[in-house]
Image (cartoon, rainbow over all chains, first blue to last red; front, top):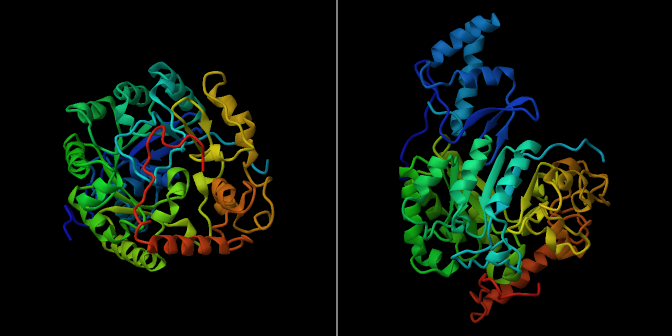
Amino acid sequence: MMALHERALVSPRSVPSLPKHVRIQYDPVRQAFAVLSPEKVFWPNDISLDILRRCDGRSTVGHIIAELAADYDAEQEAVAADVVAFLQEWSDKLLVKL
Amino acid sequence: MSEPLLPPIGMLAELTHRCPLQCPYCSNPLELLKANRELDTQAWLDLFSQAADLGVLQVHLSGGEPTLRRDLERLIAGLSARGVYTNLITAGVGIAEGRIEAFAEAGLDHLQLSFQGARPATTDRIGNHKGGHEKKLETARRARAAGLPLTINAPIHRHNIEEVPEFIELALSLGAERLEIANVQYAGWALTNRDQLMPERAAVDRQAEIVAAARERLTGIMNIDFVTPDYFAIYPKPCMGGWARDAFMVAPDGTVLPCHAAQTIPSLSFERFGPRSLAEIWTDSPAFNAFRGTDWMLEPCRSCERREIDWGGCRCQAMAIAGDAAATDPACAKSPIHARMAMLIDEAQRAAAVPSNDEQFVYRRIGVVTEPA
């Protein structure tokens, strides 16, 4: 199998970003943020949106978890599990680059 | 109306019917429009602007071959300026030097490139275009070099279904993010060529296994979208996500349609952009309202628990096979004439078993067919 890259696994040191074919955009008609990708449009909830907006190609997953835990006043461990699961799922769908 | 009318999300713009390929499975209507019937640049730009106002977030630029429009860069730029996600659906032959780069600069978000075969001989034979495969490889390389995300689209039928593993290798080797294994849907030219294109049941089953295994193996590496073959299905597809529910298409002359094949439904008449605004057509056009929601449904759809999953399936397939656009899509096991699908598969196999019939395609050309079969 000649693949140009391998499946990426989320770690605290991963630096996620949105690939070129994915973008977040505010839709004034529906008054909601949409994630646009080649064939699909996603409507992320507030928490998903908070994660995706931090996928800026500079912040590590560890940093994102710490920030969200502070913002939501939640346990780091619980936030970490959710963030890692979310990013792995989106990476597996090639909607987030690690 | 059983639910409120929502704004459309997606639009397929068939900018032209002109095409350098002559694929016998083409979804365009049999009566193809010549260049002099196409909307001009300003009309397309006005239409795109109204689409964005209405809530359209994604526009698929298709045809025919959309790159034959010399104004394609301007059309992409117009959409991009409105924040609309643009997807160029191209055959990838004969694109002049520098243009792919110009599309990228104009703001193109994504490029979808078709391959008729994974082997050069298959691509060239199905598209009836010598050297096509090599040109497509070059287009893929140029798209990647221009930084464009890439989907490889493989329309599948009996003459290339055994190439599915090679299609997967091809898409990987080209660095594509996505591969569409899209079994041909029998509308337009594909309906005319149905006996020549219909795969065997055993090949369909093998294909499903190959795709399932590849999806598993390639998780996080390449997405594979699998459009399964209708005639072998148990449940119908939610065609267009439901008639006039969140997407529509526009023909080269500005006729606004709920789907590709809608013009094969003789009881409906369709309106053109220009005389009427897009919002008026989307909201009020009798053709758009004919099969919207679930109120139009007959049994067994009407009381079916899946009625808001598959929305009754494909109206045009119901028209083509049941002779009634309001009937349940015969692809559904609950359709009283579902058995006709299996008969049509068998008929096609018998026809293909006669060597002189096999590969006697009616190739897609403007002017070949003036009266639908």
